[in-house]
Length: 124
Image (cartoon, one colour):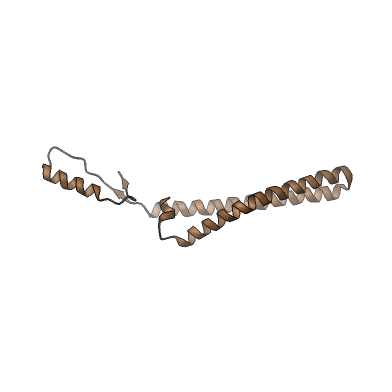
């Protein structure tokens, strides 16, 4: 969620949103189209020529191959962008443990500094 909130990569966010919208529209369309092609192939096998049935089966295989290829390429692209963002946008804060050797007024100052940290930072 930090990646989506980060104001930097606006182009990547638009691409992700566009790919999600395409995925939501293309998935049902590919499913229905594949089902209709296979249904037509079964009908042609029973009533008509086998050549048309083979053509519809080939069309179904091509349709699902293109759909799977697009899905995998898109998913891989967004995973690569996310991993690159994770690698370059790390914030780490090193917390110093309270010790008996530090006077109490310095301990309270250290406590105040740790309260002021940004929520995006990682505590180690």
